[in-house]
Every structure is written in structure tokens, then in C-alpha cells.
Image (cartoon, rainbow, N blue to C red; front, side, top):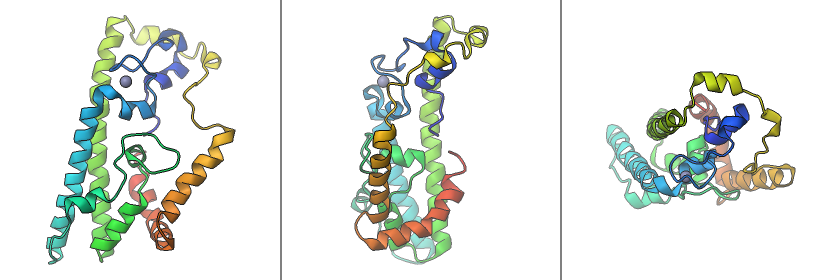
Length: 223
Ligand SMILES: [Zn+2]
């Protein structure tokens, strides 16, 4: 997912063409992967997606509980409590950006463990949730591509021009938005890791280990 050809990614491929290009929506900031989801010009669309995902979690959970002949007890506040709904990039806590990347927050594994006793039900839930999130964020990305393509067309950028400029200045491009360097790589990874593994107590760690496989099988395939 992080490999989506954003404007910043395109600079690697054809710097001469995209050097001065910014986010096609706000036209103020570099269009990095993180900016794609946090751009102020599309904040309402992202909020709507988050609401739809929350609704999906609530409705699907309750439906699965009914199927298991249990009382549908999942409330909106239980879904809010999963606590991965912030629209921001963070080195130290799980946010909606991480969910898009396919990371399962520790609260989500707890949620699944709490409501579903049967392993197959947990897997069904996670698989359906993964598909739903993918469908929503993919549509969001396609909308972006429509706008970007229109702008490129107006600027006279076509396949031939791209081909002629492909890789010409690759070494000239310095990615100023790179957050991970040797200094913060370890800190960033460690804080995320401790958030995933040791969110509240040691029990979370055990749950994450159980779901590491699920993450690989179900969330990993489309990244
Ligand atoms: Zn923007």
C-alpha cells in the first residue's frame, strides 16, 4: 500500500517533470503517502470513511454474534475504544494511517478476542474488515488519480514525455519527507512495537502473537 505512486514517488521516476508538483488537492504540501490520508482538503472524505469503517465493525460484529446465537452487544463506544481513529502520522502510537498500512492495533485484537470465542469467527471478521477497509481506501485513491490525471493532461504530460524523462535525474532527488533515518528508525520502530506488543499489559502481547499469522495471511497479501 505504501508503494502507491504518489507525486513524491513519481519524483523518483521523473524528477524533471514532477519537481515542483504538490498534492493535487491542496496544492500546498508534498504528496507523500501520509499526506494522501491527512490532507486537509480531503479531511471530510477520510472522516466519512472512518465512520463507515466503525459502522461496519459494529454491524458485522453484531451479525456474527447473532449467527452464533449470542446477544449483539457491540456498541458504538466499544468500537471507538479500539483507539486507532486519529487522522495523523505518529511514531509513538497507532493511528488510522497504520490501519491503512495493514497494522492490526492491539485494541482491535482485544476487541476480537473479547467478542468472538470461535477462531473461525475471528478470522471471518478480520477478513471482512480487511476487505471493507481496502475497498474504501482504494476508491479514495482512485478519486485522487482522476484529479491527478486531469492535471497532468492539462500540463501536457503524456506517456511519451514520461518515457523520455524516465529515470533521468533519479540521483538528484532528495526525499525531504523521509521520516525514517538512522537516528529515528530505531526509536520509531521501538515505540510502535511497544505500542503493539505492550499496549496495556502482557496479555496484549500474547494476543498479538496469535494474530501475527492472521496479519501475514489476510492483511499482508494486498500491501
Ligand atoms: Zn494536500
